[in-house]
Image (cartoon, rainbow, N blue to C red; front, side, top):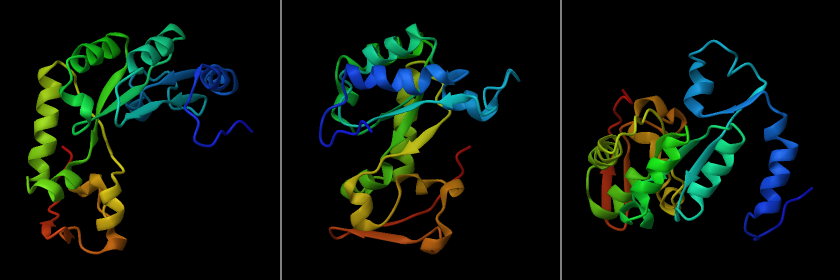
Length: 193
């Protein structure tokens, strides 16, 4: 019904989403709540919505959206991208702190394999460095999602393949070799733990 090609998401769309979906649920929770239901109160009983945001190229508007969600009692997970332009911006850390302060969860949006193929750096060190920074800032990161970098399609991989839990058996052995622009990378997945 309301799909607009190539148009930015605006306030009317947010109101429509709230009216037609979010406000009709029993609760809107972050992903770790939906997965664990630690309070035993039905956060994953089918009447709840687990909400996430993959923050790709810009951090603009994230704090405002997190405030909008919190005003309605919604919690969500914000997956931030370690190689995005905003990662080193002066507004990023205070913005992330505000989002967490509102009761939202912070996660990592990993692009480690793509960055590794472009730079030669170890993908595990890239992930560890990003996690170290977020955790140093006080965020208890417990979840990650893969970023769909254009390089994923060119070199045929998914950025979460750094983890054994995310191996793609139908693509061959987990320790397969990826190649891009004269650089190769042998995937050596490790446990998420």
